[in-house]
View 1 (tube, rainbow, N blue to C red):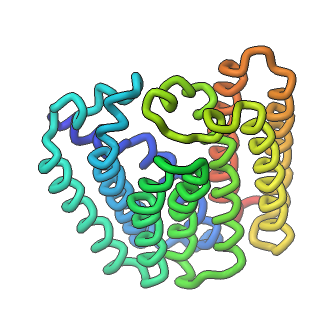
View 2 (cartoon, one colour):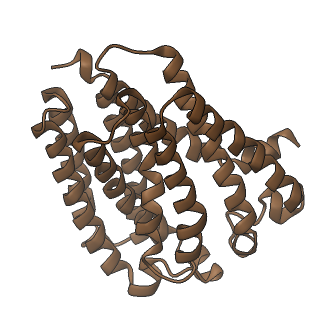
Length: 284
């Protein structure tokens, strides 16, 4: 039962988002780390994300029942009742927002609220009705890095905006790749993701376009002086590698294999990004 509740929070999503939150926090800290604040922002963010994911599982239980990869989730399978899931989510939410309110600042709390509301309201509605759901959902996915960054400085600046844009742009190729190799599931659930509605070829063009925007935002963070030379060199290497792989999709014979490669490489890219941000103060 403990495992079922743990899975209800979608731990993979929590860990991935905490990775970017760490990067944002350490970039803003510039080597002067407040460890109490560091633990507080990560704990608060983790609880908020866990709460949102638990509620999302409740909202999407009808969709999850139709997809092979999600039909065994606790709420679909009956391991956890809907009421229990919502109570659990409320407790996590109270812990998360309480921690952010007491231990960080009002800007970071606001960023958390924006991500929470976007994910549970705007994304939950739009993903069932429009291909724009992926773009709308990217707002929530880009808030943890901003929360980590603003927890240190307490204000929104160009650096926070660029971090938001980088994460928003990164998510689009990442999600479109998933949508391509999981088309069958999305068709079964009736979700209008781009590859299903407008075709894989259109999704490939969007993937390349967003990687170009990602590279632009990566360069701007360096050109505005928020990150150093090692960061921009490393990220340009990984970014252009991702771009080349994306362009290979136009001639790929096996779209599923290519999309899985794109997905896996996107994880390498975000790991490199978070690592170089975290080490920025100690690098050139």
